[in-house]
Image (tube, rainbow, N blue to C red):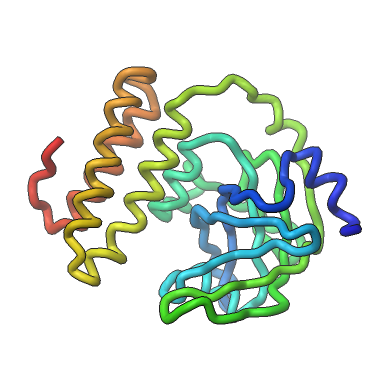
Length: 218
């Protein structure tokens, strides 16, 4: 049994489920990066499926190190996706050889030990779990709002738009934008005039910039 398995189970991490975290990495110059990241646990290692054109992938190739920061705050995923590592919205603290996200309830420190090709665009990265740190002071929030999941889904959709724009796949671009507008309506209904609405409006401006400042419809 993995020595960290008991702690992972307490955190709700079990085999065969895709979880979302904020991955923090850094390059050989110690410049950190944060990005939303899906991961799975296979009972021994953490498995990542990384696009090769991302900073996370490049950093792991250079240092082999990555931290998965577990949190249930959708706004943190949003700020990480937009690379707002500014000491205000995204605060990273060095812990040994890894960067931990302030506000995360738990951090899983990883070291990549095997990289295998999935396809032309992605690689499968098998990571050894080096340490799991639980920050009890950030584990207390249990109230759930649909705004968190709506903002998370919208953020993930927005980060995929550049991939399809590069391929000139406008059908999938439109589908993603339609989904973002759907989740915007959810946020407007369940969390109006809050930080969730503020983040969503900022996300729409980000998408608008991706499209060359064309007017978004929705």
